[in-house]
Image 1 (tube, rainbow, N blue to C red):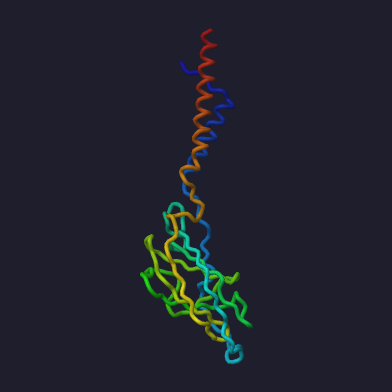
Image 2 (image 1 turned 90 degrees about the vertical axis):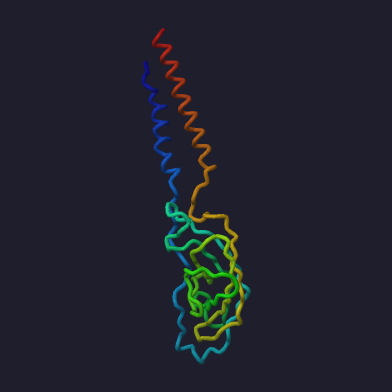
Length: 208
């Protein structure tokens, strides 16, 4: 014969059980943001007036895999990876948030699906960075030639950036690792043990 559980213990178990599905479901992805990637256009009022080319430093590259939760490693934008290019161009007239960048694929195997078009200048983000995205398998390695273009159409000297796979699978977007659930599993087991112990105590009292 089974006896009613203690109310406090029952509530605790129900809360933990209700929370488990949410803990093991993939986290929601963050909104897609490529930090630019719109077609860059020059300013007719500056063409022919500004004759100084922008200065392009050697870009810094940060590569990461995009995690879209229940869609595996595919982002909300439809891409698997993205690279953030920083330490980019400066100009005497054109502000960093209005600079354009012409990209051309070089050595290596470039992805077939990507957010830029070879030879077409695209705009960067307001903070002066440029984010590129693409789909493909892990283990990629390719180079891009980057040329900065100011609003007058002046172009910098080209720089070559190396895009290498430095990721460890899907990480971006808040996906939890299995190890993160261990404390909750232990807590649930302890709660169940407490409930069972109280059942045994209640049963002994009823028999007495």
